[in-house]
Image (cartoon, rainbow, N blue to C red):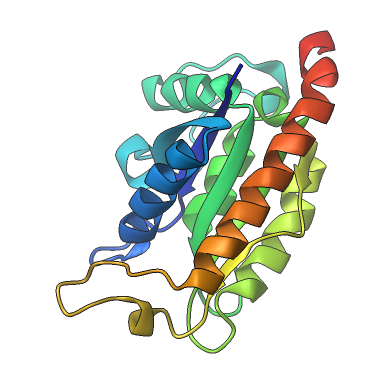
Amino acid sequence: MKHRLAVVVGSTRPGRVGPVFAEWLEAFAREHGKFEPVMADLAAFDLPLLDEPHHPRLGKYEKTHTKSWARMVEGADAFVFVTPEYNYFAPPAIVNAVDYLAREWNYKPAGFLSYGGVSGGMRAVQALKPLLATVKVMPIPEAVALPTYAAHLDKQGNFAPSEQVAASATTMLDELYRWSEALKPMRQAA
């Protein structure tokens, strides 16, 4: 049985390039064959800054956007966060989206496709790992990093991955699947 993979687009800025990489990863994961990938674009969920009256651990959501986001996260078996790096850190939209929920994240692995300048967004990934671990997500070390991301785009703005990028994505998806399988009993018992 295929596991459900949420490909989380972490940037909500106008003119963002994250959806280009996320769409490629969604198609690549579908072709990989072990996941049923779904797009989880944070811009579409339009989550304001923590506007729920109750603590997330209670699961007493009142807002439609929170209920929709909770269904997406609850239904996933694994995640890939497609993230740029903002000021040596993760985008506030991802931090906010993680903080919105609690138990829905538990016992699921996460990988990363990061992009940016010279660092390839890896500082954002490193900032996200302890946050995700706090909500019982297992961040795996295998990832896809795109330094100087614009060099990976053609003149029309399409993503043309190198063999190295595709190999990294395959390795990440293989590991995500292993972790998703290993954590499945814990998800079912929760």
